[in-house]
Image (cartoon, rainbow, N blue to C red; front, side):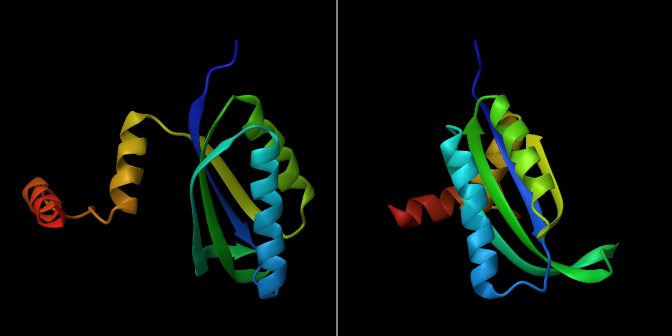
Length: 127
């Protein structure tokens, strides 16, 4: 029996791609996840960023993040697709524990760097 786990995958696209090529690549990997039965929780285009060290003679890359829930076989299928695609410079898929899941939820809501009191106050003002 397979258990559902939470995962996060980040990949770096080569910076020489056009806007439509980047969109097509992201759509391809979204489709790989959905076709393999993953439930997308969050996706984020992190934009063009400077790399810590040159990769394939490039100093920048487009970062993209998917957070998803799936069975353990899905990240393996995703890894195979990353390796086959020459537009992907680097990729990393990790299993999220309960603390990472909570952190990601707070990050999406904009609650990072705020004290618990500030967060509760903002919640009361929203109601």
